[in-house]
Length: 120
Image (tube, rainbow, N blue to C red; front, side):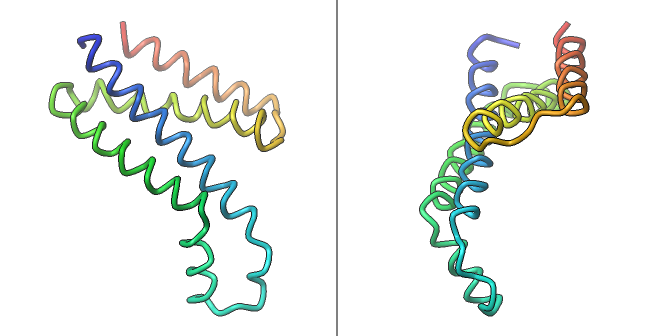
């Protein structure tokens, strides 16, 4: 895999991870949806600024992913999506105050080991 393809893949994965965090933050800030209809709740979700940012980031990440797939085997590129799990773990803990458990750390280390094996 060329270095430029690696950068495209990592950029796509990073944007997708940031999009997930943006989604989580966006839906967490909506507090007045308890008694609303499904349509009203969907409207609130889809008009949240952070949800919209997440959708935009996913869009850009998807375009980058398409470029990556053009020049890289899917079976080599796709495992890099696992990096997003690692990113989301750290961002979730650092920015969202989520908890870290032994299972989360062990699962993350297994993902890292798998990525290492696949790139060798």
